[in-house]
Length: 113
Length: 113
Image (cartoon, rainbow over all chains, first blue to last red; front, top):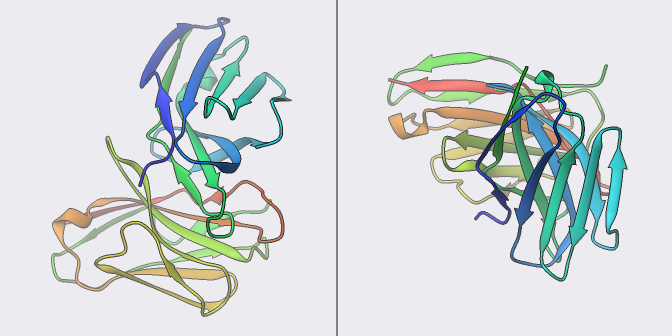
């Protein structure tokens, strides 16, 4: 069952611009995580935000969480061609099994040089 | 460098064959997971394990089984491979004691002909 839904499905920007991706989910969560996947490879964990947190930063990444709207956003600032990848949100649902994550379908980000 | 290793990057098997996908992690993680990833469907959880000899069904366990005889190794078994099991298979692991990101393997792209 899908929990997170990313928006947009695809995003194309120029190098140096900011990229914003959104994720909506349906049930209460313990935390929400963002992952990156380069073409044909495994996923790489980027950042985790707990349900009692509203914003978190890591380098050029900024994640926000609005539990009242059941949504999150991932902002990548000053994008680079190397940021080209698919980005997934994943939720750990409240009351669920230990740290089992449910993933969305992803946003494909293309950063043009 | 800590990591999750999947035994094969690409695999081609015939319909009806019994297929073993192996995953080994060197981080002493308690939790291990098997997902499959298909275009338009995102990542779907097949099975997961919290401990040695322990397993739980995910969202799409039909046609699959798993084995975890040692903490570091989690095997996915396709009892009788079918063409609809052609997919990218991703193994992941995580800590049990606190919420943390998953560490993924590079994936096995399985083609059943």
